[in-house]
Image (tube, rainbow, N blue to C red):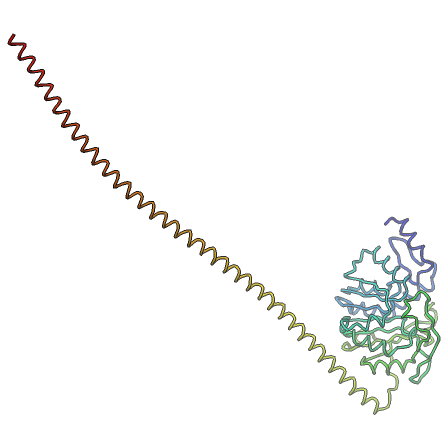
Amino acid sequence: MSQEQLAERIAAYPSWFYNFNLNGIETSPDTVESNRRHELRKEFFLDPLIQASAFAGKRVLDIGCCSGFWSFHALEAGAEYVLGVDAWPQAIEQAQLVADVKNISADRCEFRLEDIFTLLSQQELSDSFDIVLCLGFLYHIKRPIELLEHIYRVSRDLLILDTTVYDNDDAVISLRPDAGKQSYVESARDRLAFVPSEKALHWMMKEVGFQCRTIQHAFSSDDKGVADYINGERMVFACSKLTDVSSIYSDLKDKPDDAPATLLEFLEEYHQNKHNEAQEMRRLKEAQQLVREREARELELDVALKEAQQLVREREARELELDVALKEAQQYVRDREKDISVLNAQREKDISVLNAQVEGLKYLIDRIEKHWLLGFMSKIFIGSRD
């Protein structure tokens, strides 16, 4: 693709939410404050993950990926594979364009136009991703707990959640209209959005099984584009199944007041049971995988055995053919030996006959010679008398 063609492709979209530098061409160079906002957000919650090498060799799910800004940063930080999902066609087209320009193959980074609930309901995605990014998405939906339950099921460890929160010290949820974009996939158009408070989010995370801490921002009043973080309208949560997030983020807020002790005890037992079930499910899947591998190996061995048996049968058939050929050759040799014996006997008989004939000829010649000699001598004798 030439620079001119690339510039036309970029300009064909009415807007770009994130600014990319594609072969020297910026996609959104004029939105200075917005661009600075995304840089500050990256420094706030993504750079600590990058510095901790959290992405290295990991599989990442980017929910509400837009044009892939966070997905590409995860790849650059060493992620093995990133799946970005969004219900907005333009966003997915832009993400794919960026991936094409960067020569990123689909086996490393894939973008799908799909309703996230439809995707995450697929059972085969269980425990598929090491890190889930849910950045600027939760406050657009009316089923936040269902989404978090899906994320817990597909996640192996970390969830980074960046969301608008309801400014209230209690565990409450604010109901707000949210029509979304008309171009969204139909199933993804929630008309209402449930926006939880910080404490409500912590309770929800505990409910589904995540350990959760709120990351404390370090923005100043001079930082442009991040006023919603500064005034507490938007927060970032580091959630995990295994990792101690304090080893990644140094500035973590104290946990908000928890639920009543009886409820906490119930939730603790509930989550322990869920954890045990997850462990059992993981072990079951591992056992099933071992069974499948063993069955595949046995199938390979069975095929190899049948091939070996076929080779033995072919060898036995060949040996039988050779044995028949050997017997025929031996019979042929015996027949030829018999013929030779008959010929030798006939030859000896013929030689004996010839020898007798020769002896007879010798005798006849001897008689003839003697008779001739007597006749010759007689003529000499008679002649001398005359």
